[in-house]
Structure formats: C-alpha cells, structure tokens
Image (cartoon, rainbow, N blue to C red; front, side, top):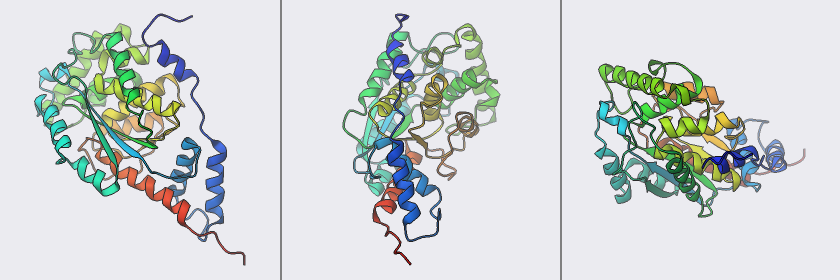
Length: 331
C-alpha cells in the first residue's frame, strides 16, 4: 500500500525501470566485429557505442547533447568547510551564463548545449548538523524539477553540479549509504587545507550522529543530508532512464546523487556513464561501491560538468566510429 509519502511516485518508477534495447546493443557489437580492423581493437570505444545504442534503441548517434548543471547552496557551509563563501556559487552560475566558465569552452569544443539551473541559491538548505536539509515535500518537488530538465528531446544528458560545500554533502551521503566516518570520505574539495579537511570530517560525523535514527531509506538520506542540486540530479537521472536517454555523470557530488538511486535499485544507473574520477578521494571509492568505471582520470577537480563534457566528446567519437568505419571486404 502507498505510504502517502511525496516520494511514493519515485519509488514506483524505480521498481519498473526499462532495461534498454539489448538487440540494438548486439547489432552494434556485431557491426564492429565485421569492420576492417582487428577484433576488439577499439576497446572501450566499442563498448560505449554499444551502450549508446542500448539506451537510445537506435544506431549510435549524438545529435542533441545537453549539459545540465544544477546549482545549490548549503547551510552547513557556515561551519567553514570550504575556502569559498556561498556567494561563489552564484558567481559561478553567472560566469557560465556569460560564457566565461571552463564548461562553456568545452561545450564549444564538443558542440554541446548548456543549461544552468539556479536552485534557490539565495535560500541555502538547513544546516545538516542540526536539521534535515529539506522537508519531504521540498525534496520531492526538487526531484520533479530535475525530471523536467530532460524535457527538450536531448539524446545525451551530461550532468554536473555547482555548490560551495557540496563535496562535504557528498561525503555525508556516501557515509550514510555505505558506512564509515567523515574522515573516510572527505577530501580537499575546492582547496581545503588539512585543518579544514578535519573540520569537514567532524561536520560529517555530527550530521551522521544527528540523523542516525533516520538513515535506513535512501530517499530519506537524500533529503536529510543532501541538498537541492542532489535531489534535482537524482530526478534528472531517473527521467532520462524512463525516456531512453543515456546519461554522462561528472564528479563527486553528481555521483553521490546518483548513488541514492543505486541504493534503491542496483540497476538504476545502467544507462549512466561515469566520465571521470576526480582528485577527491571519496569519489573513486564511491564509484567502486556503485560499480561505475570512469572513462578517464585526468586529475580534474574543477566541477561544473567539465569532466562529463569531455567524456561527451568521447561518446560522440564512439558513435562516429560505428557509423563511419568500413565493413571488411571478404577475402
């Protein structure tokens, strides 16, 4: 019976996720086997093209890619867990809107669309060391908002995040989902020194202790320890699955949001490709826990979807290899 929770619709969706088109995937693998090249010589590029076919149900192609950046602010930032103040989130959003951010240059390089979603930056979430970040209705509404981000017929969704303090939030979510203390998951984020990293770990531990009796359900974990960008990202990933849209994930915060869905249904991220592992130590650990293998490791920790935008270029290249390479002539 329904619980009456605002999360019920999301739970129902997560129980009945489409499996993708296995036949389309097989056709791509068969095509590569017949091409004028040594067998499996293109390595993971062949796998990526096959993955693209499975989750679109079509021949591999990237014609309408979209980078979706979700930006949120966090009340827990008041504890000095970042070398930046929360106003830096708004500044980053404005820079991307003006075309001067790193993500803008990568979108130009790979012909990617870009949308930046300001999730009430002037109203940070509650401090998770003493309250839930969001109430149920706000968290569910933000997930629904994230679902709307894929409503423009994109064929590849590239997801990133912006938010001062959100590496600490990602660490708290990871610890709640997979165990451990703050020190097991926190890292330098946007440049924290050793003292600040210790403060981040302590903050995570305080949050885990405060919410200790309410961390058995992943969506409850998300609304208590997460934030608006985390909820919106989870919604966008879920909507993409329902609409047969492959997804490329960026850094630690984006992956932590995805991990919430994985905790509910282990197959929930099968349509997702992890772009990279950042220099944040918790990111690599989290990727391993949810079974995602990064496309590359370039030592990136810039955020704003930069790693995912780079990986989108790899996805497009894999699709072109499939469509453009010649079939081997019979001998």
